[in-house]
Image (cartoon, rainbow, N blue to C red):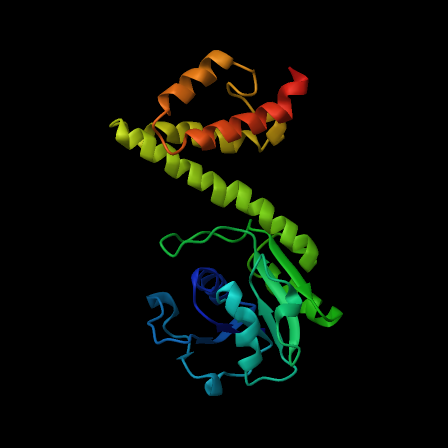
Length: 254
């Protein structure tokens, strides 16, 4: 049984806590949060504290707080020679205080408190400063996911920026499309089958093979029509930049 304490209860830790609390191989000893809060009903049997001095003994302490607070907060922990791991994709492992053993347990997924998702197919990226701790994190990750991979801080930084492109940037483009449709009294629901098919295609095709559209086929007439439709829109420049990027990538293949 792996004993775990969660330090912070934001989006990532709330999902990890739910998953680990359901595992017979993990004992969630406690949840610490800097401000008082009520845990979800299914987790209310877990001890909760806002006091650093009350943190319980555990095998792994999972730190889930904003990236820019990881370094300073880890230095305030009243713990020594314990395994402290953060869950960030963009923060190096050695940002953690060296007064404790360091590690990373990064679930490569987008999390929102309004949605509960299964973690069994979510990659869990791990890193540790000691081989025995890496083994423990691999074991812990395996209690919630079928995919546990060792990835260095340098590799994880590159993985994280790639994730921003496919998740954050793509979702922003959904927002742009929703706004454009709303201004013309059209329903965003109309685009959802297209969005789903675009995502499904890359299960069998590479992204470059799946690319379609007027920029890919150098359809100047359609592109010019779109630019005209967007002439008074703040998104005209975004459309032009993305079109040029696609043309630059695929132009030599036309």
